Image (cartoon, rainbow, N blue to C red; front, side, top):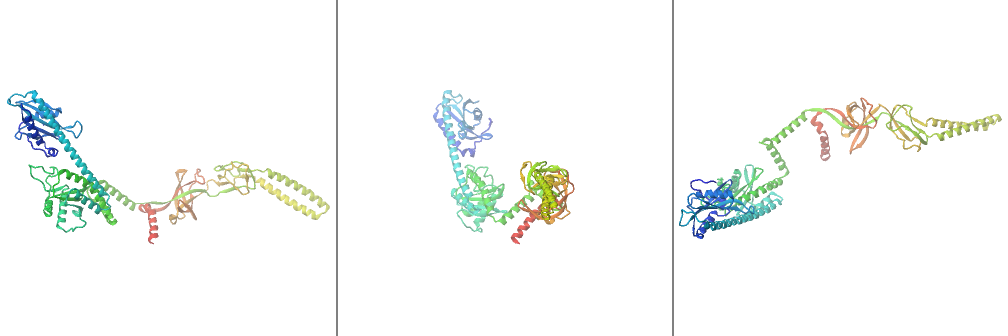
Length: 626
């Protein structure tokens, strides 16, 4: 604020006088300074107060003072932040001292400036003596210190009041939140507010379509909705909700008195319904607060009492209702029955979809509709997924030809072998000793038979001939075992199983399996088909599979046989189906596993994607309802 000509508007700002009466303070201390300093005359005084971003005069003394000449010293004090004394252009001196708000910090922020014009008593044209100005400045400093203490005390009291009110509101909010239903929560809210505010009546209405319907009245379990008072209260609630702001009655129009409600709150609200309500109920004051949630009007709270509402009280109640509205709306929604919740959810989504805004929601809906249309009308090849295992078409078991010991082994599982290749050898030392023994015994029997033939002993000769034939048979058996002591490959192929490297020298029983040999390039495929899809499988169907060891080379196959054999895998029953490979790469090995899929023909995509779900629903529906 700078110096200017003309008079200064000394209208007291209500925001300042709400803290402390600045005009009364200036008048009181101006008169006290005049009486305390005999050599000085206090011509006039002014108090400037900060109203961001400008500084405005809030007090003048005496009443007929002009105050314009003091604006320069006030600006200097505001910029310097300390007390100053300055000579005026005409006559006299000017004193200025800053006023600080000590509630912000120990040093305090600058909130006001006090300026005085001082004349020398009896010689108005001469400047006052400096010796007289020093005590005056000290007295002004003491007076300002008292003003700062008054402001600090008022701010402290106001802070305690707000904290106490906030504590009460938090307690009320907690009591609302702990209630299980909307009716119980609204009864708790209205009854406790009526007691805390000393209200005649507190009513809560909730929005239904375009009108507000009364839901709860303090200290009243039941009420007749057709009563004129109830209808008048609902009209007042609609009046506040239509304006989406707090509406109260009465509004003071006396410019000479302080209004209980600030200018921001009382800017020409439409309150005819509130006037009618007060006239009908004979309660002089009424206030309605809209209950807003996410920018939408949910309901309204009407308070009726004998004394008017102030700005701070309205602001605190608005904050309280901003917290309670969401809790009340959630409880109201939870109290609805399931069909009502479903219908309401459908309505909410339809409003988002068809109303304004919610662009992302609409784009998502369009994409879902496009995807559903594509799935319903588009077709694709359906496949039945199966587990696949590669097996050789024929396998030959190489077993122990006789009871004995393993002498040597030359192959292991996975080795390729040729027809006639020795796989392993049995220990033949005992067999060769038996062979020599049988040959010696056979020679002795031949010599004995010749002697008996010469002597003509026919009976003894027949017995020796029988022993000779028995020994000859034993010798042939031993020779047969010796010829089979080397285990050979029956054909070209691969050793599927068998590893005797850790069993050399160990005993083996006759017929014990040592190796399995499968011919190379001759394979069959076994598919494990889920029982739910086995009826869709038929001989001649085609498909393809991917082995775990050859994921980059899919192999085509054709169903050749459907067997009654079943297997249990991962908790489900599967049928074994045999198939023939169209080609057999050299990298194939019996025992390889992978995943196969059988072509089932053309189907709509929605049928392909939902087949398992539809089958599961059919089974469960039949199980429960038949």
